[in-house]
Length: 283
Image 1: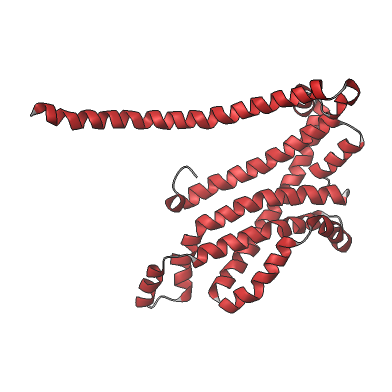
Image 2 (image 1 turned 90 degrees about the vertical axis):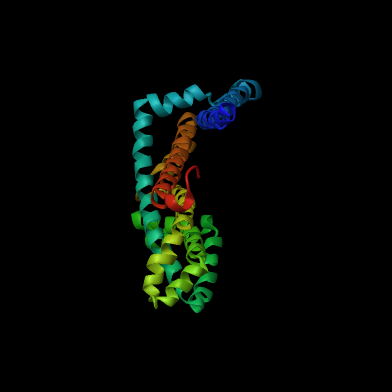
């Protein structure tokens, strides 16, 4: 009798012990696997530099340590990259903030009336399909090569995913909740505030996270084409390219990528904090 009683306890104890081990193994795997891919990429980089490129063309792809020295150690290059990246981050985050306000407002309006959705949505698709390489020079010619022009480019690039994801979330609330609200004679504002908008938060943050990367790209592209006014990392990339400074060019490219990664990660973290009850951990 005592033996059968002890068996569930042993199984429960082993299960409890195995769960932290699996979690630790999962965390280690999430660190080790990307690190291995990084090492493989660096090894391939070095191999291309010294085995594929001849000595006369080796300056086109300097080794990783030369790029790291230029971007992290050399004070002149480091300060130039940091200053340019700060300007680009200011433009990108401002554009993203404007896009969130405009996109969420449009999505809310579209969710409240079918005729508004049918009227506005086609133009949102058109904005998304505009060739940004052709639009950026026109924005500069029309509005000047200033801060606000760069922000407009970021808004144009990042608006669509915010609209579509927020609209999807607003329209995907549980119909049973709306039926319950109808029984209580809830107003449209009450439905939006207590049912639709909380349900839309996970999808909305997904759209904002996608839009964050697009906003960074918009800031870099506008800066690269404008070449005056409010110089950022895009202008610095063009300068390094023109001067054949490939160590600085690659370092600035990695800095630009790091900005996009930081924005993407921060919005994902903020979304988990705000919408953890809907998304759950680990996403």
